[in-house]
Length: 547
Image 1: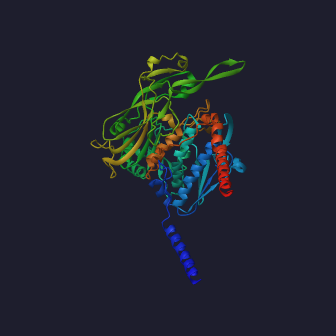
Image 2: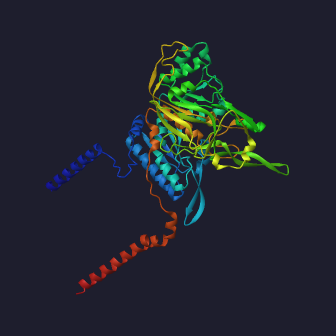
Image 3: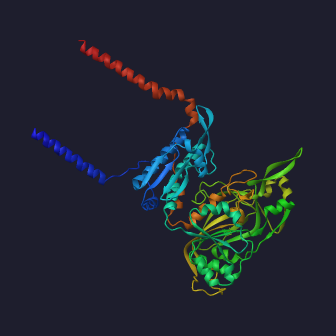
């Protein structure tokens, strides 16, 4: 009896010791070939900063298509990895059925899907969203990318690839105690606020946004430069007036002191509204006095316009039926619909971007790394300026032989050590902040000022990613937001958008055609095997014991 008690005591003590060791050496193993459940160091650093409860509510719960059950499972698995990394992260999956109106009001718009099951097509609505709450702050996360895809399988793959970036980006944004500061430059005829609202309102959700005028350079250039260098990024959106020598020097020294820049420039005066009003317009070069500044950084924006056969549409009146004017959407080759670099984080999975009267960019040899971001199709034509552009030319027959100028560069990322354009020149004013170069800086230059210009509908700004007349969807806002994130990213977050996974999906047509075989293999055959085994076992048992 004493021996039994002793053995039981040893067993209990052993179990307690094993349990303690197990708690001390707790780990999770990722056995997938592409390590899809292994968190990056960037994500681990972000999650480690969560010092109080962070609640994640996911609205992928309920009855929806089977392929999106996969998205639900992958989302749950990924969030469990986050929760395992930091116990302050709490996860909850909720069905959106009783709160759809409230979700829509909070910006979580539903997605309508075409579902193919048993060879039949049907429609389904899901809410592919998550909401993150941290203290008094909250933000939403889209679980489906906006990129144009050829199938739902591809959409599912891109959604799963994007999970780590989407959640890490949102958590980083909501937990940051200090925000980067972004200046929207004014004073040189830049776009009015209402035309930048769609883009800048999104920037303001993540960064401290403020207008900054260069007009004060004329009165107190030293103080203006000092104020500007305290900011992290300057957005220059479609200036239409010439920069003075002092203003240009101020921008140069902002960059030399480490400031990031996002340039949206028109080197040709050409306006779509003027064309609609009169039916024709004169397109002519615009001198912004920035050529030598950009040249020192290794690029040149030309004064030729680019026509592209792969273009966005504009609505034109084509006649009347009774008293009703009939409109038709026609391709307007002066509005190129350009693709992004699929191998860079800024443009990966971004829908085609619409440009308006864009110019080409030439790159020059220097020590700056230049990465193309937006390129035209091969079927382009260069139009020299000054020249008259007539709206009626939209009806001209397309002669493909004229569109052989090849790919044209419209947006480029510059990274490296930028030399000041005033390194060996007379300076417009003296300043103790003067530097001859900046180390490890970066900027994005876009040769179209209208890329960030949203339309106005009934006096209110319209979504930059959509055309109010044709309802076409574009990737303008996503591209610009990604550019801002990349320029201000110190965590390496934007690189998570380059994550690539191989998701093995079911061939629905083949499964439907072979469904009888697979039903037999998975349901009937196991029963037959079990029945045969039981029959043979019984027969052999009777034979053995009947003797």
